[in-house]
Image (cartoon, rainbow, N blue to C red; front, side, top):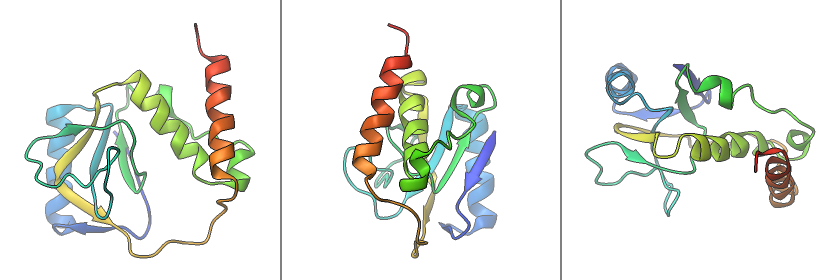
Length: 146
């Protein structure tokens, strides 16, 4: 697995307890993308995982902490640092989420054993995000096999 993590992530339980449990989840379930629960997210794309006892598949995810299986990595990585990211840094992660949910449906899993969050957010480019996301999706559609 390749694991990506924001620098300011807080975790419950402690890192000493959470990391071995997350590693065990990855080895047992072998998801294409493995995720923790994320504090403060709600809705259909949520990673809050309230009440979860077993891993759950999702179609969209926060990139605060994520692990991509070595066999899935060539399809999802590297990040597409196109000019879109100069205006909205969320375009590359959105693209990865879209590709993962299409190519590895039901194999993008949340582990119930780890809860992450971050209380502060850096200042970064995030203008015209919806327009740029639409442009990225249209580009994906035009370059995808029929």
